[in-house]
Image (cartoon, rainbow, N blue to C red; front, side):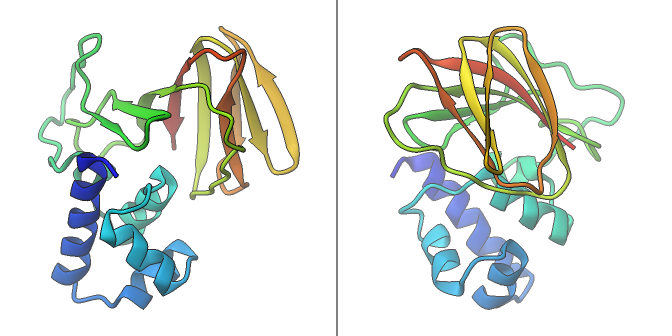
Length: 182
């Protein structure tokens, strides 16, 4: 697994130890088994952003601190220049670029997400709150529960992120979209 995922796993383990929590405590927050959570802390498997969001929300830790290892410092504005946001590539197929990682006490987490084409099935995840997606480039299938929707460049969708959801690039080409998690 790539080095960025190992670093996130290290931060998760460090957070759990600092807060004097058991693996079972954090696993319960994420609605997964302790064994599944141990795998996340091992850094050998992908760590879904939804899990990081759940942990951050529950323990009042900024998502940026978990994903990128840096605490936000700005409170009046935070400017992200094109192509320069803090980024993490969770797998070969998914890259997340934060557009507001340096802003403290955000009410939302905006990302540019790039998904490469893959033959793998859509992986569904959930997280508290709501999500907005706007397709910048390419086409994708977005599955929410049992419903699959095709989104084209310029399309957007706002949905309940507590429902199982996931996406897949279409046409053998990458898709890039703005995702805002509230």
